[in-house]
Length: 272
Image 1: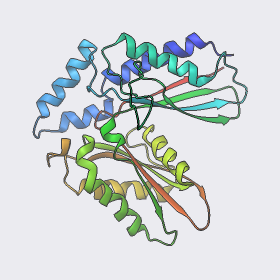
Image 2 (image 1 turned 180 degrees about the vertical axis):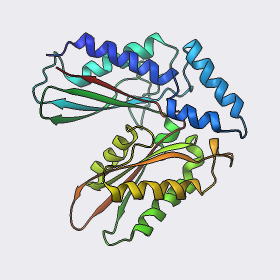
Image 3 (image 1 turned 180 degrees about the horizontal axis):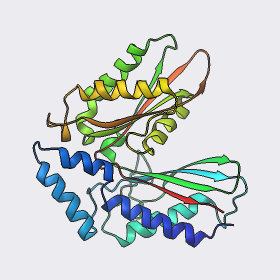
Image 4 (image 1 turned 90 degrees about the vertical axis):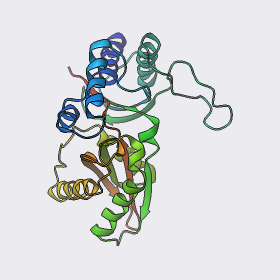
């Protein structure tokens, strides 16, 4: 049994940190950047950390990835517990509410930034690991699903992804953290691409082939010259992370997801 209040308190702390303190690896890239608005971007990070104001006015919606051991017992459904944490954080801090209840017709704001998007994966054991992304609208709108022919070459796969970043990358507040999902079904590959974004910047895939493919994609995307904030100076992407899954013999789903230069993410672990 994991106490609900313990989960809520730790998720609240992690959400505030993600919204106000720039990822250390992203900060290192920002400190090396000397192009347009570099001083302002660095000042923004300092002001946010010192004042508690959010790093960006788009404080996003929260997407959770819950890895739950089969022996874990909770007092309520995990989605309700996580929404309680999100509701507390967004109602007690100067964070924008970005969630609308009806996606197309009324589009009325829910007024507390819930419900969150929650993906749950059941595993063996007593461990509960909760990863999350703070997803702004600009980066989320760059998401893409490609149902490719399984006979394509590596070059064709690379060209598909790089071309999508070329067309849209400047709108996602680069440098981007790029997640790629390969395999599964159409919706599985999209979840994999989001899951890839929860990895640390430059955490290589354990499979040497996919680690090489990550490096190639990163190199070709940075060769596009989009640059910081789309202004043509500095890098276009921090990293490319790939997650894979088995798929049908006649399909090759490939999905693209991106995070903006703030890389707002977190991981909270509960272990016996």
